Amino acid sequence: MRRWVVAVMVLWSGHALAGIYKSYDKNGNVVYSDDPAGGAESVQTRETMVVPALPRQVIDSKVNRGVKPGEKALKEPTSYEIRIAKPLPDQQFQHSDPPMNLDFSLKPELWKTHHFEIYLNGERIARDNYSPVLDPEKLARGDHRLEVRILNEKGQRISAEGMNFTVFQGSEIAPSP
Image 1 (cartoon, rainbow, N blue to C red):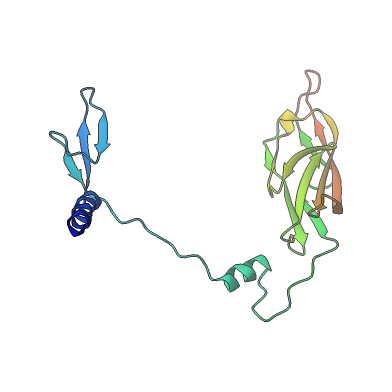
Image 2 (tube, one colour):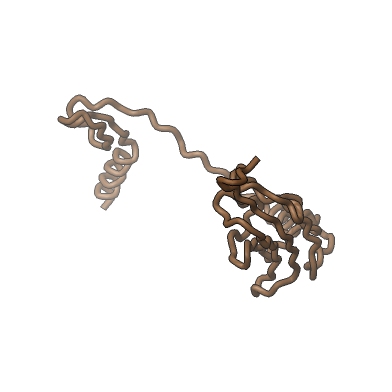
């Protein structure tokens, strides 16, 4: 029985020490293997880097928006102040203007289970994306409605803010400036 155990350990230790070898097939493709076939060269391997998980209190402090251990967690907001900075309300664009990123801010910070959605003319164009692109060239001429909505985890609207802007399109008679 001892001989069998020793034999298994010797075989297993040889397998554990087996390296990785690099060779080329007849078409010139690189082949990696644990078998040192004719002409194969040994490849240096590095130990896999392992990053330990953060301590639970650090994770909790991030999830609770900076609440330190022992402090009371922030209360879930029931409303938000939404400020759309770009585009400006009633701003006018030429159809040929370059694309721009929507810019808005929230107070307080977005709660961990809340989401925001951005609507253009009643159609959702983004969810949890702070800077979707608005391209006047891809929009029809005329008035457009942009709205930012904050939703709770059940999908119920908590807050909303909207604004209008206009896209003009030049013509043969009156080209864009």
